[in-house]
Image (cartoon, rainbow, N blue to C red; front, side, top):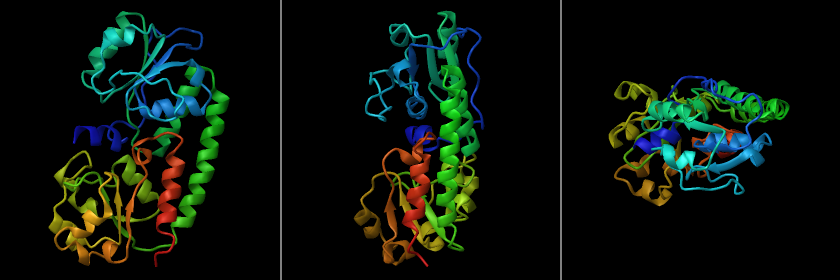
Amino acid sequence: MFKAKFFAAAAIGAALVHPISAHAASSNPTRIISLSPSATEDLFAIGAGPQVIAVDQYSNYPATAPASKLDSFSPNVEAIAAYKPDLVILNADATKASAVKSALKKLKIAVYYEKAPSNIKGAYAEIQALGRLTGHSSAANSLVADMQGKIQKAIHSGRKLKNLTFFHELDNTLYSVTSKTFIGHVYADFGFQNIADAADNADSGGYPQLTSEYVLKANPKVIFLSDNEPVANVSARAGWSTVSAVTNHKVITLPDDIPSRWGPRLVNFYQFVATSVANLK
């Protein structure tokens, strides 16, 4: 469940990212290592891709990103230093992240300490911060403006429904997200009602594990799957054939990665959600 929270959350920590460490060079970095899939997408979207020399094992987008075996969950200082980077983007939720940050600073390697944003404003702030850091402020600002316009358009088209209840499934043990999380904020922007909110006391971070009985009683109109669980398996669960989302064929498989990244493809997430509910009444 740790990995699900680490990425699917895209969401637990503070609303903003930390600034670069005091050891940062005055010129733009040219040997960047990204240990964050979201930051990787941001960097390439703002034109800083040529400055990136390596990305972690989960940074699978864009395809041109320089893949490596660097571990973003448990970063290895020696392995990172071997690349001779002048900037490392480190996720604050990684194992022993503070110790890794300190060790890199001792090696005179600049560190951008990234905390997962809790809402879309935090995502925009990270894009703009990375823009300033890499010398691509103009492109970053343009990207944010483009995202804002497209997302507002998607929200407008999806807000036509009233009292739409939904269940977002993180895994088949029924972990979910509440409206406190980054993913939950996306659905809240549409005005949808999250059935997990009433169970929020089960997890202070906003990731409750629901029971089958709870979901059946809530009877959501839409189920969003972010765990690649086959729709047929959901329909075959005991008692679930009577759930509104199942009977009306509104069990929706979300695209890989998109719900767990807070970069440029947030636009795709909003658009996908809007399209998924377009023919509901």
